[in-house]
Length: 281
Image 1 (cartoon, rainbow, N blue to C red):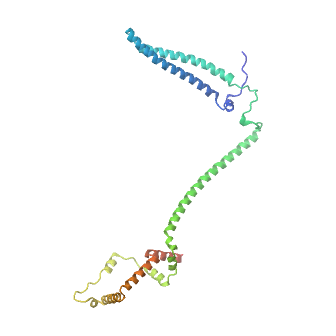
Image 2: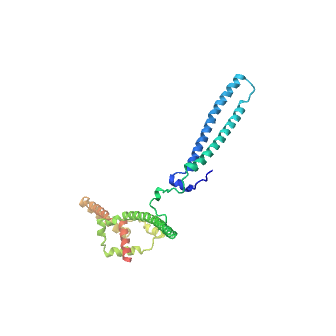
Image 3: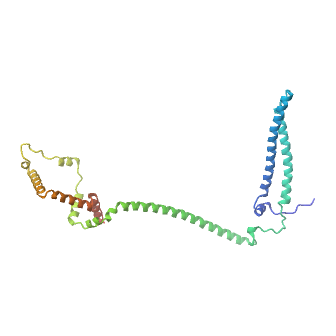
């Protein structure tokens, strides 16, 4: 018998053929075993029908089920044994003849064409170190990208919150507010004085809400000075309304509307607080 010639290592065959020869042979053997199984299954149905018809025709005491099953198992085992022996020879012969490339055959893999494979070990070590450095840089860039993406999301959220706050304070850009920016000094002093007042206690609120009871035997202007002033102002206002025909009330109404058009009480208070904060800063 001639000695087997040296061949290309088996690890190089999948790279050259772009598939694994062993996997191909395994698939062929599996298809053969699957064909044996399908054949035995089809034969099982035929034998059971034949045995049941024979029992009805001969009417003997014969356990056909057990004998059919034993015969099928023996038949399948015999087929699988011959198939394994045949395909073992086929696999060995294929690997030694079909998928065997002589070592002295000049084979060049397509993706290794025009490559210089005579590189010294020192140069190869240097290239590997350079590749490791590049991998580290790529990993650092990926981490930096994740941090920048997170920072962009946080900045977007802060920008949306700032836009909502700006929208809430948009009333300060109204033309009427610009007229209130030049408030007299008396308003500032009044706001400072009111802000410095102590908070009202329930006892003080109760004391202010209690008004002196009027004497039932006296007229409103005879009770006190405040009663007289109240009665006199009501008389003057009634006479003015009668003489003007309601023009006074309309004037007061227009004054209230113009005041409301300039700003609300809450807006004025916020403006005073902003001015105080700017002065303190």
